Image (cartoon, rainbow, N blue to C red; front, top):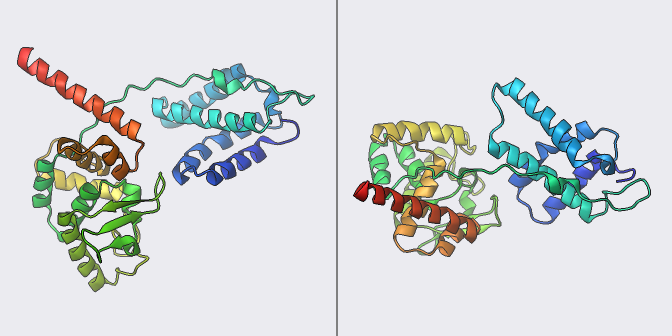
Length: 305
């Protein structure tokens, strides 16, 4: 790496990710790990760091400190995210010739030897269309009903659903649409379902009375005009689900998955579902293939077990 400090390299890498279109959440995720690595490297050149040093010194030390601080070992997803951040940093450094010896000769990228942990993907629960109806009936206020409808019927991520401003909701056309610009993926426009359109129109009327219908104000917000946090939303959903008699864990994401599963059952293609969700088609196809396989196994066991 020559005279380029690792902190400067990381700063350049962050700018590179933003410039090449990486989502803000991805940049933030990587940046929670990379400063720890820079502190460990210190004044050493990147070319002096071997794969064994990263694995046996840096990562082992991080693991121990994590256990001491949290009282449990890091989850596989956390370890995977940490390693992906390191591998991406090194890929950037390799591409732009920062991994060199004292003579400037390129060295092999040591991060290629770092092995990502294998993660067994679990099929998480989702809220079916029938359960959605039960939750809507169990709501005590119109704001609760809007919360459930907004999350399930748009299938937005919580971080998207709490940031959409009124300016991005088009009720002037039929069936209408919602423009999502603050997202993990590139901005996308989703269709307003007829039933959701009614919920949105009624919610808009209530927000006008409250002085919360300014074009820049989030559609789904607190009485102070701030977007609702995931923790706040999940607490409310938990109470509604309990009143509805649901025993499964209900969260913002299980509502999103509920829309996707219902769309699949009703014949939508995985490509169309992926586009609506803002996912890669392959990711969506892989996940729902696992779901369908799990259902087949359960039915076989029930019939012949």
